[in-house]
Each structure stands twice: as C-alpha cells, then as structure tokens.
Image (cartoon, rainbow, N blue to C red; front, side, top):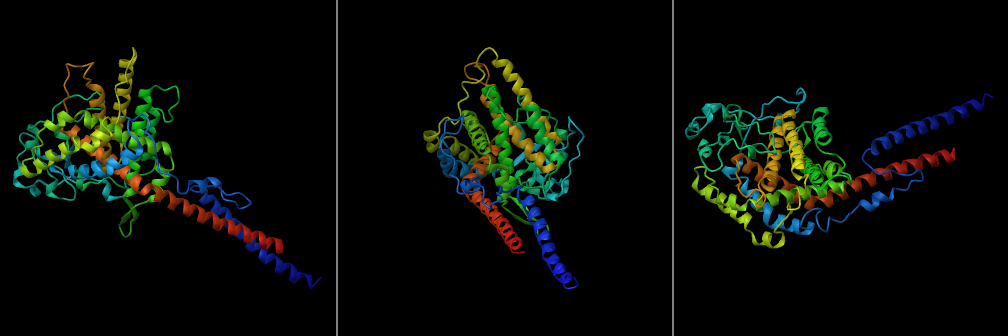
Length: 462
C-alpha cells in the first residue's frame, strides 16, 4: 500500500495538464467560432471554408441594372474613378454646407466618440484671409474649418451663382437646413470618411432604426419593385460606408498607425454577396442620376473666383458626362422608366418619399460629428439622385424643370466618388481580403485540430 501511493500521485499530475489543455482548447474554439467556420470532432475542416477560398469575382449583370460587373469595374478604373478623384478636390466640390449641431427628433443624443478625428473644429475669424471676410450678408459664424487651416473657409460669392442656397424643397429629404445662421462650411478634404471610434449601442441604433422603421431588412417576394430598390440603396450605402471605415482604420491607437482592416471589410461586406451586389446597384443608380442631369450640370457655372480652377472643374464635368467609353459601354446604368406605374404609383411614391425623409432625419441622431457630416452628405446625395430620377419626369411633368441647390450637386458628386472608391476597393482588394481571412481561419483550425490530436494521443497512452 505504501508503494502504490507514489504511483497514484504520479498519474494525477498528467491528468491535471489534460484538464488545463481541454479548457484552453474549448476557450480557443469558442473565440474562433465567432469568426471562423466550424470543425468536426474528427478534425475535418468544414468544406464550406475551403470552397470560399479563392472565390470568383462577381460576374454577369448587376441585378435591376443595365450593366454587368466586368463593365462597371473596367469603366470605374479607366474613366469614372480618376475623373471623380480630381473633381472632388476642386474648390467648388471641396466644401460642403451643413448643420452639424441638431437635436435628434427621435431620442436623446447619447453617442460618444473615442477619437479626436470624430470632431470638426471651428476656426477663429482672425485666421481667415481678408477676401473671406466679406460674407455678403451672411454671418461669419458660418465659416468652419478643420485643424485651424484657413483654406477650409469658403468664398461666399458662390452664393450668388447658379447653385445658390435657395429654399427649393426636395421631397426626398428632410429639408431643414436653409437657416444660414445655423449652417457651417466644412472642407471635405480635411475631414476624410474613415474610422472614428464611433461604436456601440448608439451607432448600432442608427442602422437598426434605418432598416427596421423605414425599410424592410430582408426584402421578400411580396415587396414591390420600388420598395426593393429603397432597401438596396440603403444597403449599398451601408456597404460603402463600412468599406471606407475598413479601408482607413486605426490599427494601433498608441502609435497612431492607420491602415487597411481586411478582416473587418470581409466580415461586414465581402462575405455577404447581396451587400456587394447592392453596392454596385447603388453606384449605378447614382451614376444614372448624374448622366440624366448631364445638360443641367454641363451648363452650370462652377465659379469660385479662381479662374484656372473653375475652368478645370468645368472641363472635368464635361469629360465625365461625355466620355465615349461610358456612353458606348453603359449608356443607361439604371432604367427608371418602369417605376411608379399603375393607379397606386403616386401613393406608393409618397410612402417611400416619407420613408427616405425619415432616414434623412435620422442623420441628426448620429452621436459623432464627423460621422454625422458624412451621413448627411451621402444621404443628401442619394436624395438628390432620387429627386433627379423620380421628381422630374419629362413625360409626366413636362412643365417642371430640374432645379438643384449647390449643396445638392456637391453631395451628389461626392457620393458618386465615395461609391466609386468602394467599388474600386472591392474589385482590387476583395479577393485578397477573402483569401487572407480564410487562410487565417484555416490556420486557426489546424492549430485546434492538432491540439485535439495531441490530447487524444496522450489520453490513449495513459
């Protein structure tokens, strides 16, 4: 009996390590299962994981549009993205007039931002050039810039030009931004759309309200075509925003290291084919609005007082609108002619207009100043596209002529550029992101499988 005791104790120590190892494996599996495919007890990796690796690019026609994915990618790379990138940097399209400080009409604002990049700063009047101190009847309190840079100020002489701040109602947006005393100018080039640290319940509540209260989250066969389009536009915009957050992400706050978060982009967009498809749809929808308003946009005076820059802006607009490759390959990106037909057409339009107006009003509930800026701009841009395509119809409303505010044009072209950037990023980085994420998943599962094998081998020998 005395000799048996040491043997019993000796076997207790290995079993303690077995127990610790099992706990470690279960913890690792629980953590990995949130982002990885499942593994079976036999150690075989889920076949879906292997099939997803190297998944082919999107091909065929973009649903509900008149162009295929390959053509869109080619035109975007060769024509649209280069022109739009130059256009949004010009003085005319660089500045956006916005009311940043609004009370949320739906709930108290409790949003919090962790980063200073979330906010927009106001410049003291002493920092503006002398030529910017001539407000032409408007308050100098409207002039706003980022990081105390005087070039963020806006020449108010623009207000007397073609796209002046007139109170033209847009039936698609919550048009409550005509009071100049509460409006501010923002230099968009100094306030890029990127990760801001705005997360948690406040950010989640915005999107939940957009989907649950204003458009169905999962469109069913019972929905009419117009309702499906509203959902796809919101989903496509959501995908684009997520891509820009992932494309310029704060990887390490301590060292202020920014870069691409491919895992985030995959988890939020790329692994959902419908989200990618809706991104392309929204891009073509807005492009159609721009091409439909070509005559109006071409004849506009893009006058900022800088003659050379204004000529460049005019040239870029014409180059974009009349590019022969675009006109031949995708002359009508989206065909809106068959919508709002039948006796219920007018009633349905009013219903969807109100839904989109609610979405527009929700932008005031965003608890992050920079996020609110880009939310307001892109929703206004989408509302402007809806206004162009559906509020002025050559056959039904021949007495109406298209009228756009300068802010609507700025929002429209900046939105098209944001969507163009997202499409470009998905086309160039999408396959690499998917492969990278899947390789990480496979590697993690192989580690778990080997751990299981080692434990089972140890148990079998004891």
